[in-house]
Image 1 (cartoon, rainbow, N blue to C red):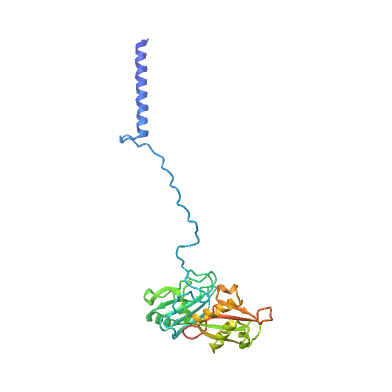
Image 2: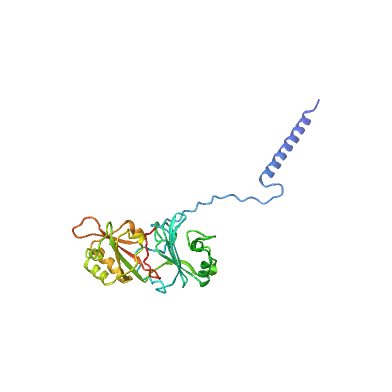
Amino acid sequence: MESDRGRRQRIAAGVAGFAFFVGAVWLVATVGPFDSTPRPTPTETPTPSEPPVPAERTGPAVSTRVGYVGLPPEGAMPSQPKRGELVMSYFGRQFAYWYQVWVYEDGRLIWQREGNVLEGANERATGFLEQRLTSQGVELLRERRSVEAALFGFPWRPPYPASWLPPGAWEDREIRAYVPARYAACYLGLRRGVEPSRALSWLPERAAELLRATAFDGEIDERWLRGFDGACSRLTIGQARRVADWLEDGGVRQDEFRQMYGLTYYFHAPRSVASEAVLRFEPILPHGEIGCTSCG
């Protein structure tokens, strides 16, 4: 029979072996068998506070819209040269939007489109915009089989006309507002034919006098004549601003819907209630044609 002393020795050895095993497991689980560097005690990183929100956030710091409708902003310089030889023009629909485009011998590419374009005047219309081609760029457009292929041919990148042209074809590809040197103030019957001289007699006296003095035989675009006869007066930008101011001072009502497309006024005879005539300010393009801001 085993003595008490022998049993005590075996128990002591077993306890020591078990303690060694537990210690080894703890060492591997914490620092690994070959890493004797003590691990730093993790500290809690404070959550950074959010930057203060500006008091007013109305949009991007710099607006990308350069177009305008109606009369140009104060100080805007007219496009040069004032007159130009037309090379090609286009009026039609591309991918559900109406375009008007004019290309000139001097390299100017003037265009407008309905709908929202990044550089346009508003969500409904671009206003008249301008870019500049080199003489090589004009020739490359001429070489295409048709005007549509020249302006919207492969690889066209909507919504910009002639966007397929290589970089060397552009003198200045940046889009700017086209500022005409002259405007046409055109007046005609709204629902029936009205003699132009009679229509002018319904306007404030100062406006009527200036429009009579500057009347000319300009060709009005039939797309917005509605079949009625009308007349136009040729105005400088300054004269156009004065006429618009006189109309406003005289209580002539501006067309709120067409404010998105151009500058249009409705007016009528003194004893009438309903509007009988309309006056529109339209740019005179470099080749002499009167533009049409809401055609399409």
